[in-house]
Each structure stands twice: as structure tokens, then as C-alpha cells.
Length: 286
Image (cartoon, rainbow, N blue to C red; front, side, top):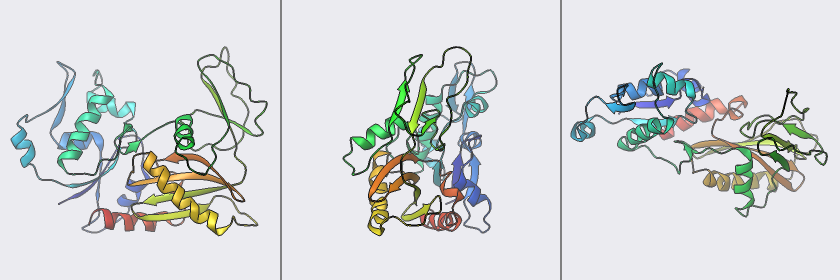
């Protein structure tokens, strides 16, 4: 049974990068989503704007050989939709995800509880904080301001505001409000949490913790151990995916949840990620 990692055509993935650097017969093959759909027999029918299979027989479909798939299509980009649907296509994002999900099911790939992504629940920061706040976890969430549409926001009470998109999971440096002519729409700002930034990530059963800045005094050991417990609880909120990472801010005994991400962009910068990814591949594809 071949081993395959599937990714969006234009959104890079750290796990796929590690796989591409490996050698050996058991190394998983990296394939773009558009090529994967084509390999599975799907094509875009421009006559009725539908993604179809070249062989519509379900018997033929079931008889195709199966493979072990690691789904890393965290986000289906508009450019990938254009590639699959053709330059003049009007293919809908949901139609692609439906077909892709059917393929994952046929290959018996574990599918998490999905929202907006086949790898799990993909949510902007305010939704993430709402979910964590209402899950009963003993952690805080950042103070923020959001102005719907042209509604202005007042950030005078924020000690270190970060102006960014609510979909930006990785910018955590205080800055100035964006300059723009005319009205600003959907303004968003979050207050930088107090404490030391700490990243935890999981790849299958592997857990890792990294401090993202040098500190003179480390947080208490029981607080650091507790981050793994909190991370597992957060992962359940986001669909129990195979891999993910959480940014925390730790201030003594106090912990603030900043963001959960399926993208693993932070984990990829750590010293342990490459070895952990290889171990994850061996376990996942065994």
C-alpha cells in the first residue's frame, strides 16, 4: 500500500517539506491536491460546472487499490480551486472538498470532526477564544476588540495592542493601527498577553514544548506539564486532528491560550520538529 501526503497546490506544509527531504522505500510520496484528484479520476466538466469522475461506476471505484493518506490540505486556496476548475471555471470550493472527502473515506483515512477544512476545525481567533472560554479550561484568553463592518474600535484600554486580521494566527508583536484612506472595515486588535510565549505541538502521540524567548526564570514545572493536558483538551475542540500546535503565554502560574493552528508553522522552526516528524511518519504509515 503506497504512502501519500496530500497538500494544497499553493499553501506549503512543513510535514510535506520533511517528507520531501527523506530517502527510502517507505518514504511517503508528496502530491498536490489537483494532481491527486486527477490521479483518482476526477476532472472538471465545464458544461455543467461539476467535478466528475472519469468512471462513474461505484463498483470500479471500490475496486481501485487503496493507499495510506496523510491529509495536509489545511486550507483550500483560491488558486488551487482555479487550477482544478480551469481558468474559466466556476467550480465551488465545497464541491472540491466533498469529492476529496469521499476519496479519503474510500481509502479509510481517519477523518476528524471537520469545519472549513478536512484536517479539522479551522477557525479565526475570536471563535477560538470563544470555544476555549466555554470549554471550562483553567486558562485565560486575550482581551480583544472587533469592529464589525465600519464600526470603529477603541483600544485605549489595551496595554499592548496587536492590529491584525482575526485569521492571522502567527503575528504577536504590538504594532500601530493600519493606515488606510477612507473607512477601515472589520478592524481587529488583540492585547498581547502577559508572560513568556511557549509553543506546544503534537504529531500523533508525540508531544513537544519550546520556549520562544530566553527567560531567566522558567515557569513552574507543573505549569509546563499542564500545558500538555490543556493542549490535548484544545485539540479535541478543533476536531482531534493528527497534528497541531498551540501558542501559550505563561506568567508564573497564569496561562493564556493565544492560538491553535493546524499549519505547524511555529513547530517547523523548532529544533525537535524534523526528528519528531520522521517518527510520526513511521507510526502513521506503519
